[in-house]
Length: 229
Image (cartoon, rainbow, N blue to C red; front, side, top):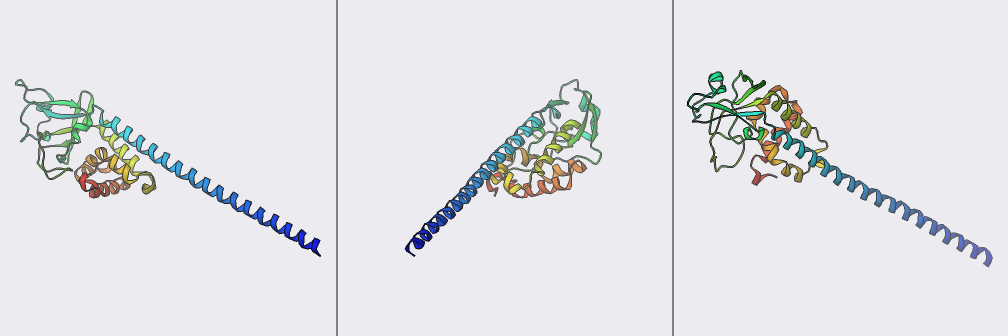
């Protein structure tokens, strides 16, 4: 009887030890999986932000935009001066200067006319985005603007590139995971200048409804950077 009791105790100890090993292995596996998942998420977040930022900057640096330059354009409307503004006037006061796309994404509101096709400039089809200088701002703070407001154009390439990038940002899902609060703040210089209602109106049918909803949400929350949530 004592021998049987001893053998039972040994078997019980072995069984408990095996269960402890099994539970330890499962726990270790779960912890390892959780660590691996968190690492993957952090890497994916960083990679997504980096790709979106680099792609956006490449588009914003394209020289696919034009501004009226060389004189006082406070009362000029591009739609009424398609020919006279395309060519430099004898006194040098009226011309269109080719600039980077980001120069046209400044705070003053866009106010394209119903017929926004300007025509061709140096072989590029150009579209009016700011027909006339107005004090209203698409984004920014209440302190106003200390720079001249110029009528502006974007080329077809610039319009398509911008809309494609916006679609790329809007397609990130789930946003709470891969487009975190940090990423939304980091992308502020690139997103805020295309998110206003005036910008959405100009992009028009080039944007999907999903992209439009995203821009409206971003503009509502992040128009003023110092109060962005």
